[in-house]
Length: 51
Image 1 (cartoon, rainbow, N blue to C red):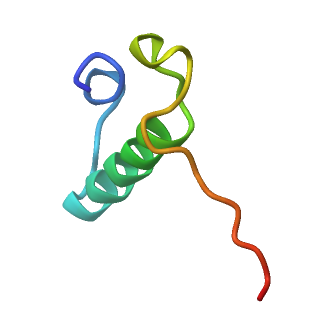
Image 2 (image 1 turned 180 degrees about the vertical axis):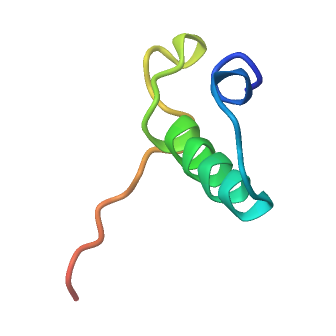
């Protein structure tokens, strides 16, 4: 996380840091591929079907 996010820029407020870190966490867990999982994300986004 430090190499990919925290070393990349400055945060001017705590709220800004919280928002950016949360966006990064969601991307990391739902979109980004992981080599140890055969290129799949650990928790892929699901499609919500209309009921």
